Amino acid sequence: MVNMPALLEFLVYGVPYVFPGALGPESQGVPTAHSGPVLSEIVPGMDSVVWPSVEGGARGLSLTPLCRQAPLMAQSNQVLYRWLTVVDALRIGRARDRKVARDVLHDEIESTVGHH
Image 1: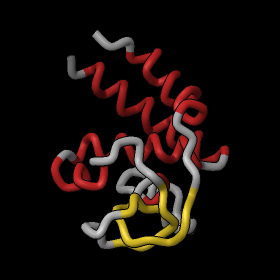
Image 2: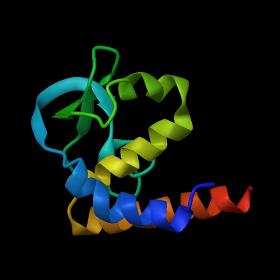
Image 3: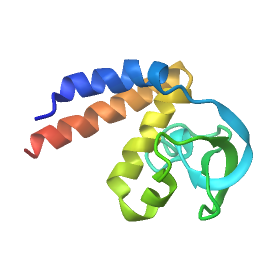
Image 4: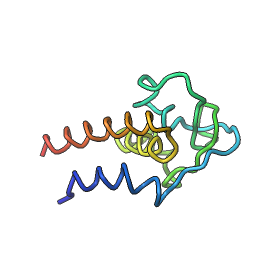
């Protein structure tokens, strides 16, 4: 069984150090981080960020995803796509964005634990 509080702690405090993100040149791709489906309504008005992919319909600064297959997951696994985009906000976000991402992940983990 996954220790959900420890998972949240690792995602919030470990991932930015273990898997730091660096923004690259503008590209076509799949929205992620604050541009993804979860945070785009909460953190508006920033430059778009995408995982580079010819399959994506958005343009923005490029970010290498944690998993090479992540752009494909946007269509095939919405839950995982949502989580990966929020984790990307932890990787590249400013302090406010990281706090919002942490709160979202906390709520998602709480709802997951509540369903088991």
